[in-house]
Length: 150
Image (cartoon, rainbow, N blue to C red; front, side, top):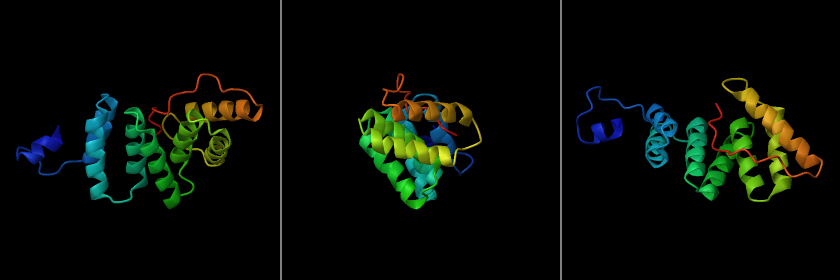
């Protein structure tokens, strides 16, 4: 891990891209290590909503859902249109039984959906879940919010 190389003085490039490192670690399922790298990336780019959203995803994957929700809310405080934060928070709220607030965030996500990456899959899922909630139904097998959104 580049962080450890830099810490112990064996990083040859002299520059570590903590965000890329964190994303790679998330992909490998090394969530605690990813969180460390993403926090270091946040120190380099304070308040960066993209980094904060990935931190929220890491928190979710290690079961720190309250911290994840708090982080998503922080992103939304800075940028109320952050679709990834609306999506992630909606499913955290839904898992916590807060259907009305989850529906608000699903609507906000669908008002300004992302267009890159695997966005269509998330848009379809959000629409389906919102429709089920509006019809008073229990959503089909709540999809884990652990998916990387963008």
